Length: 391
Ligand SMILES: [Zn+2]
Ligand SMILES: [Zn+2]
Image (tube, rainbow, N blue to C red):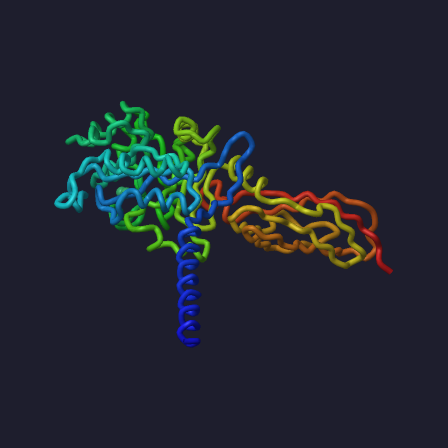
């Protein structure tokens, strides 16, 4: 009797425990977590994180388009565009789904709106080189770009108000030696103002020649993932990896503002730990990322003082000393300003008898901020040093 009573009580406790456990799962659910891309805004503009080039099963991608929205949100993007190949030969699943080139946008839009992301309608005009592949974004009807003649497809895109950019000009799939070439057709598009930007980076590839053209011809710098597979297949997010993206410096977080910024060439490209862009934008990003916590220090004789440099961004900045030999002090030749960390910059006195106050500019170049091919952004740290002689 006692034994049965005990068992019943035990059973009640176990059942209650299971119910409580089930309830707790129901309450908490699964966490959907977004990782922000920590690259600061710059004076007057928001820094929007954008990817204007990716695919789904509506061309030759391997994912349903709504996954692109979930990925964009999780990876901290603000703006994205699903750009299916227009041409039939890239429609890998046309036996399984009806190909309508506006569909990826239509089925993804409600999810993007629910998560507060901007989804821009686009498509990829895909031809042999030359001319190669071109994305057109801010389209109204992607199906209307299906034309026999390449020039007519681009003309249609432009008539819809599109921003047109040349994709992966140095891709080895179309240029065996990996060299990007500017053909007559590109000159034709450029002269007609039907070409507005170029991908200087596509996934892991960077094209220095294209970077040079973009600066000379005043084309907008763009960098995108061109994802066909789920992004988690090619990126280890736990190690801090991220997709190649375009940073757009926009007046506000709207589609119209993104478009205005793209035509006004207010962009930079974020690939790996490298930022590619005009001097003024990269300088503004660096200045808003990095702060000297104690710009005034005291050095006694040949001893050291430590400047604390805080980097609030995700980008790890690699600094190399530039300019000649410094007077009265020595500083490290190389400094790594790790993303989201504070590092110490050791300043050493060189003169035992030195005394008085001095304002000193430390000149460095940030190796991984590219203002032109092989040309890095110069920066200075201004510090004040109180020297006191040692015996
Ligand atoms: Zn392509
Ligand atoms: Zn593509």
